[in-house]
Image 1 (cartoon, rainbow, N blue to C red):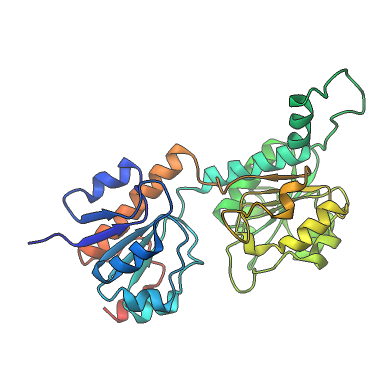
Image 2 (cartoon, rainbow, N blue to C red):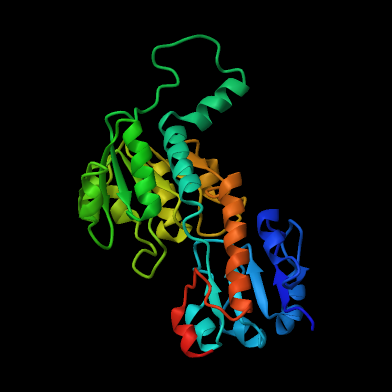
Length: 327
């Protein structure tokens, strides 16, 4: 009996590939590069399962074309590229990989915080260009993390992991989110505040919320102007949470000290993006989960989710449980 046909955008780590061995018939659309949209379009009607390692838009037309599709296993936590309603109507289970990238993403937030605070981009450029010619009391001076106030927007697993790390730097924690979490406040010495008050009080603001209708464009001109002149904005959540045009104005005109970004409205970032020209903005190419343990964990979860669904069981990380009424 032929194995179920599964298409994969890019090869995942061996930790996941070994789980799939002898259970599904895998076709790779690409080893490392971007899959050809024409190939994806051609093969979709034959796919019973997908492992998606990048943000290919999965809209109603996508699911209509994928008539045999039973499961779309995402190699990510976020699923904002997926029309969940359309997937559910089509009887397609959508799964993700939560939990395994919490620590790596929190580490990235702290890295961006430190780099922006200590002017790492500007100072490294000066040194590489030979500008470090003498010691000066006022040269290369940045901001302290110790004793500063960190405002965390979104106090889920990643937000709380950022708080734990920040406590080690002697930072004071305030947070906001859809719901107050008193069970963590004493443990993390955290105070709950409405967003506006958090923005006014914070020396650093770390965005760790999910992308929803409510959080799309959450940080715009109004919110950036509320922040302190020497505040730093960190975004490891989703690019669309921040209005990038307003952020450029804020960083170039001195509304705030600067920013540290790992996510963007458009990815990969176009080379004409104005933020690329600002030295007070640290920018990373969406590396939040780019640590060995995290990527291996994502590979295992993506593979396990797919195998469970393909073999007729409920996968452990099902995003759209309403689909079970349709299959």
